[in-house]
Amino acid sequence: MLRLDLHQKVHYTLRMAVAMCFIGHGAFGIITKPIWCNYFAVFGIGQGLSYQLMPVAGAFDIMLGLVMLAYPVRAILVWLVLWGIATALLRPLSGEPFAEFIERAGNFGAPLAFLFVAAGSKNMRGWFTRINPVMPVDTATRAHLATCLKIVVSLLFLGHGWLNIVGKEALLKQYTSVGFSNPVLVAQIVGITELAAAFIVLIKPLRPVLFALFIWKMGSELIYPHHALFEWVERGGSYGALLALWFITERHPIVKFNRIHAIGNKEFN
Image (spheres, rainbow, N blue to C red):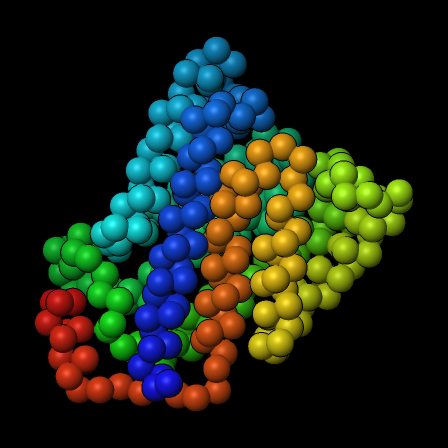
């Protein structure tokens, strides 16, 4: 298959990842996840009002996720990067370990990587027009995208490994729920392995390792004791970043065709 398809693979992977992340996150607002009260409390909002605002915030997240599926635009991606960073930061700001912020790098990293794929715009109108899935990516942009994805994937494994090392209660419950009699030991082993994976990805992202991590991440996120499906969907940014990096690390160069380039430039401008 010609390398022309590489851009499309990365485009649709990150597009789906961004949608999953914000649809899953929004679902927790709709079902009024109690821990969200802690995040509203950062702004001095009481519990009663928090429960009233959760469905509103959740519905907004879901709406933006669906828009990214149907009509992805650069302006929304910028908002999703900022929103992803802000919501992830609320965790340490509310008293949780800073690792909680790092572990959610996929939430803001996937839309950031998608911005690299979409490239910039020469005018304001371009920020609100549909992102072209067939516009080729040049070598420099591909290099920047690869660097972005390596950092994002490294951070999410660094954060998750860190949480295992410190024995996050929710993770220990996960390991207990699947039958491990010594969840603390399992957490330590998983934590050390994930920290090693973070450095491997950052230094030299080998494709077999990336694919193994992709399978591990998708499988391990299914063992949440509560709302497992929503938790799995929300972490779409993590899976998408891994899969996109796996695609982008192919050794063959991107093949460009003048006809596609012309079509891309026409829509871009």
